[in-house]
Image (tube, rainbow, N blue to C red; front, side):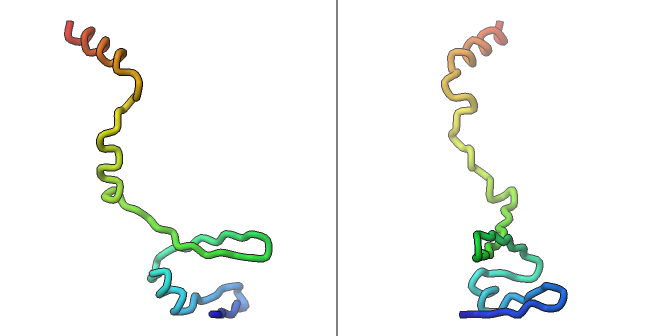
Length: 78
């Protein structure tokens, strides 16, 4: 079991073993979830726009509305 001590300013230092296990570095953020007598710590994983690239590839913008799209295209072509 790994322990940490709360300072007079109610702060703790995450032990190196915990930081290493979670891949935490300077500037990373964590979120706490409190359930009853337990508290859970989870790293906040920020994703850049690059991680979202291609996420909607092949998806139909408005499923089930092909007839309306065809009618709109025909009207625009006239």
